[in-house]
Length: 335
Ligand SMILES: *[C@@H]1O[C@H](CO)[C@@H](O)[C@H](O)[C@H]1NC(C)=O
Ligand SMILES: *[C@@H]1O[C@H](CO)[C@@H](O)[C@H](O)[C@H]1NC(C)=O
Ligand SMILES: *[C@@H]1O[C@H](CO)[C@@H](O)[C@H](O)[C@H]1NC(C)=O
Ligand SMILES: *[C@@H]1O[C@H](CO)[C@@H](O)[C@H](O)[C@H]1NC(C)=O
Ligand SMILES: *[C@@H]1O[C@H](CO)[C@@H](O)[C@H](O)[C@H]1NC(C)=O
Ligand SMILES: *[C@@H]1O[C@H](CO)[C@@H](O)[C@H](O)[C@H]1NC(C)=O
Ligand SMILES: *[C@@H]1O[C@H](CO)[C@@H](O)[C@H](O)[C@H]1NC(C)=O
Ligand SMILES: *[C@@H]1O[C@H](CO)[C@@H](O)[C@H](O)[C@H]1NC(C)=O
Image (cartoon, rainbow, N blue to C red; front, side, top):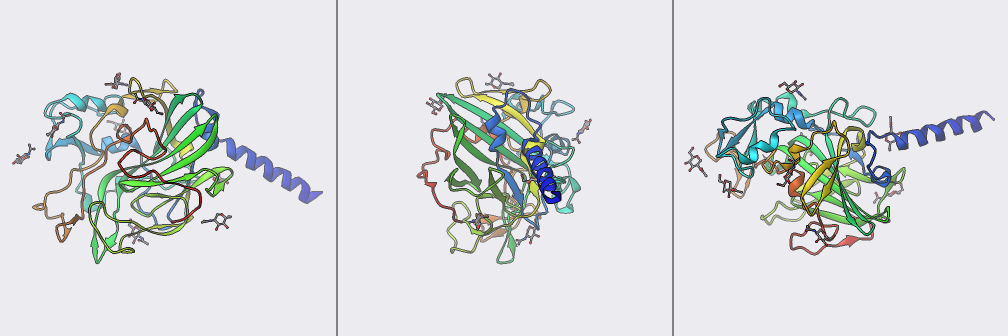
């Protein structure tokens, strides 16, 4: 009797936690029901971060020179003005740290989740593209103030301010069919069926520092883009560390591919920032900068910051972005 009633309490709690989300009305229920559940690496140092906080701690620069006439304060409602503020033209703008990043300023660390949530900050962005005919793609974008690239033969390579990563879940008539995992310049796709799940939600393991996304735990080899290195030389580490549920700290939008317009599901959600076409971190430091180091001039300690969600092929034909590579949708789990 006693164990029976505690079991019912557990299942009630379980049901309650599964439906907790701050999604505004209008977001399709399957977009939250089958959202990825993220497991950060147990040794992670650079956590999910607040979008507005990135603006507060950076200055828009073009070619390492501050842009004049920037709105003050710079907010998620006016960031897109940088697309047309000469010499800033959007693509050449870098949101550049006000602090020397080698002094480890606290804002680069982001917010470690408590009870699955990055408290007090908005660190995820969910974008829904309804293609019509029952085909819906939901993008789950993850934002981190800093990317630690990893250490290779004693040299740290690929650090940068700002880090955008994502999963995309493809739905057919409300049923998830496949999931994309962004990893460095590309990623991996799996059928939904092949994936391991927590409470029906696809598991996403976020690699230490680089925040590349993987379907299984353990060590993952990858290669630096445009540089051939021996297999196993460049590794990502994942494990089942802290859970970060992106639904608990997200902005939600729909995306119209025909007009390339974003709409918030909720009037209180800022939307203009999604039109910003520049970079969310410092430009790659020149070789003359004493902070910069390289591995034989082929790979650098500090690389440039990334572009935001608008640059991640939001209207895909396949589950993979179209980058010339074959789109392999894996039916079995693997590294
Ligand atoms: C994880 O990243 C931190 C820095 O962000 C680094 O100090 C640590 O060595 C990394 N762990 C592994 C296993 O690479
Ligand atoms: C950013 O700065 C503004 C003042 O310019 C302040 O009101 C706001 O709280 C700050 N936001 C964050 C997330 O630090
Ligand atoms: C960037 O600035 C440097 C001088 O600081 C100048 O030599 C170079 O031409 C500039 N590059 C561009 C693309 O404007
Ligand atoms: C923006 O300016 C840069 C030079 O700073 C140039 O390379 C780029 O083509 C320009 N982009 C657009 C869209 O005008
Ligand atoms: C955290 O997420 C996991 C997986 O969805 C869930 O089982 C657990 O109940 C959640 N914890 C809290 C405190 O919400
Ligand atoms: C998937 O989950 C099952 C059940 O928890 C587990 O036994 C298996 O090791 C997991 N597979 C991978 C590749 O992580
Ligand atoms: C968006 O993607 C669909 C394929 O799902 C394609 O048919 C359509 O033409 C694309 N729309 C635009 C504006 O590129
Ligand atoms: C974003 O840009 C598009 C295309 O340039 C424009 O139609 C739209 O109004 C802009 N959206 C916002 C929220 O500024």
